[in-house]
Length: 465
Image (cartoon, rainbow, N blue to C red):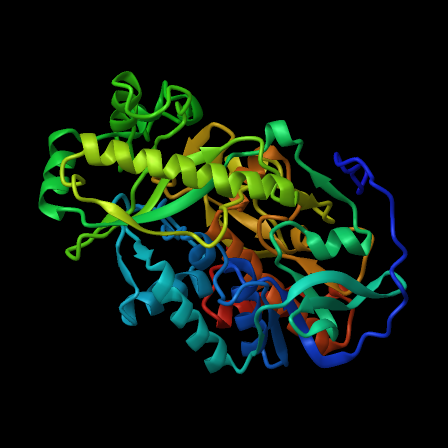
């Protein structure tokens, strides 16, 4: 498929932008673009492997989906027999808990990470590692030397600036750097994209009454069936497991005319209810046909999502015990996007890989058999897991670049596994170590010694096999 797409907006003419000279304001060994779970892990891993690292982020905080979107359930899939890579992803949870920015998660053996508190946790991790932070800078274009990516151009209040690097890691989530560098990418058709979410948090909830209501009418994953957006395929073992699922209040609100009849997809999960009266990580609003690479779609999604969230809150007040006095505490800073571009990697993950415990000689970490997306939900309760190969991070067609996070190569169902934040952290840590190792060995990223990468990842606490 072509790497390019045609805009749906009609041209109203064109302008000629004058040529300009852009100042190089910074040089570094490893440049990480995007600071979500993949980018933050990549930057920390590279720095801990002894190279100079710079971390560029378009928002005013690090953490990506955790902090800017408010997806606080970093490892909500974790159960007693779940086998994981550990490493920096587990460190995110542990450091957040130690710093008072995490509580036990409602449906798993993990911590729910406080979105606001993790901004400080990430700051501390970045500073401890000696990473050069560059917030409030949006990626504009790669700087190329032939087919090699040697830096990026950013845009900010300071105008356009260039940052040069010996190695670049694309952790934008949308393969922005790879795409604009000419690497082959695939953009999921809009009508097939997973829905985006508008995350919000509530205050003023009576914890005792809310907990009693959940206990009186506990929901399971089987209850997700028959709810429009929430129809899912499971392996069967998930069906009787507890789920913090909410749908009945919204169905009743529609039936009784409290909210518009077309809002049939309002349903989803809550994360934790606090003694302070906060009900957090409300994952209830899901919008189909929103392309996260199209700013017009994003604009429409932000506005429509907030409208639906206010209707959801009205239904919760009316029909959910303990929520009678609930009020909006905050929205996430941006939409939660699950699915846009993926790069064509040297090796693209497959549905067979994530369903059948794939094994690879160039593993950079493991990930439990957890699939969440495209109508499939499989939770890792039996100890099954797969390997994640280094080749999955290496894009075709360009040099000097690795792609980490949900934009790494793969098909539809493999994406439903590898897009998850904990998996992105494993991919990011592998990318960071590999980038640093290639500098130590003065070799191309495609030629890096996988044995040395695996040795360093093991030293950093990652389970490889």
